[in-house]
Length: 446
Image (cartoon, rainbow, N blue to C red; front, side, top):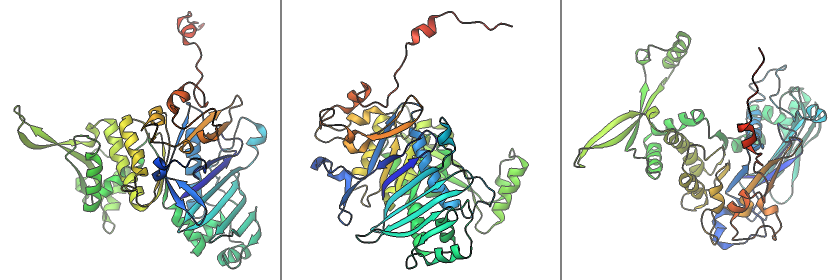
């Protein structure tokens, strides 16, 4: 489970911000006790979901992008980059000092009952610093600390692979030591990688990036059953979903560009080579008297954009719930009805649907979630509601509703109403549009 993420000097985040999934000790409401999981070994409770609000261009998506960058860079910096490749970080560019400084990231997470803290600083040219701490029981142990290409601390008992890599000068300046160690099958590094494999970041605006994962589940009987139940719960009117695999080159569409056709044909020649064809939905037909006439087939592209997104999301959400993973979604509510979004969030709070303590982190504009449920049993606790706000200098800040004093926000308040009133910030402050729309247009001089 993710415990905390911090980022500094990345895109719109100039100063350090921290997203914490540690439940507030001051909110002991038994009505929301299913919203967190108790971790006695760490003396904390970890939240199962977090919602992030903010105006357009406030930095909500940049926070998700920071999480995605960290995941991808750790997993790929060793095997997918060469010595002179640039590191794809982007510092805060509205201040010359920040633009020249490194970006900093740190993850704190719980894996197999043990706490890990891993972070690094990077520029586009090099890894400036890197560190890993491990807490197997009650005491945090420093595994290694890197300062440029100097490895000041390497724990010989916990990180023998790191000692050898540093001694043999096998770590490039633009690669993470952790990533290189994982390539050499270091046990501790592989454990960090195992957790990262259960930490996924997706966009709610571009479902084509993960639709294939859902389609692959549909092709397997057990996975398909769960997907169909998930779709049925959303009242989409879909009786069945079918995927037609392409197994021979002759089945490829004739309109494909020649280069793409060659690549796909090559894939089909490999062992167990198969390409997923179009996804079909089946709907029930009825005569004018309401008698059933069987089903009729449609292309998935014929469905509404909301249905397409919900279908695509079903795979990642089901996998997350079944495996106890952590899922980060940018713009979760895009194209979806508010009741559907509320239902999705609620799945993570229920012991029946989330028995393995999976986590959902999402940003949204759906203010209905702030007042969903009831004053006695809200959908979201105060520590589950976060805001991103941008100051006059273009720098984003991050804070939780639970950070506000109790005289500003109390249990049972209508958080939605107060948010839209601007009591918590993180909303657009709109200028007068009438003057701009009624004044005479300025015609360009030719």
